[in-house]
Image (cartoon, rainbow, N blue to C red; front, side, top):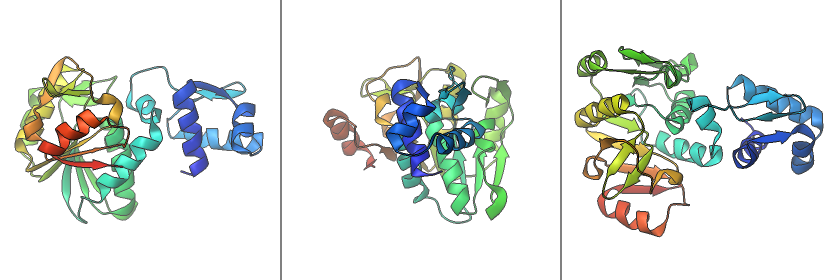
Length: 246
């Protein structure tokens, strides 16, 4: 993806909808070039083409959420790649930043990704010999996640050292929280099994509280987020985890 496409997604994150002519003027390229970029981004599932422009997807699915704060999430994803060794088997839980992480990781390293999320499974690039293990379970169509006791039983049958997880919220009082109880239950199970836990999240999630506990702060080894993180949360996380700001 080009830097210009990154700029387009950033503009869409701020305005949700934008015209081709406005993008062409802002980015100082021809409308034809913008249309080509929008076609590529639509094929990636990051936006929807509309007559004369484009807009973000109006849903809570991962393709929609990937496009929000895209440049921050991409920097986080690329930093996380540094922690994975060639040939390693890792667990990657659901989340838009994790989807970008898997895409970046498997484009550069031969790894095996275990996941409970079908969208993330489709982001594995097989051209370098990477592979994916999609854990079975009860399918949630909106999130494309597999949950329930069958998913937990499948996780018990595989081995991994590092787990990369996404969150919907964090406060010191509540820990890391998520919107969905069943996905949070899977997250608890993964975190308990992993030797090293990485939280990948843009800074907008810190300070939010959601329904279900996904994991406690003391269970997390690394937090990778963007430099917009407030001083309050920097102090909290730096004292308890290996904090990486990108």
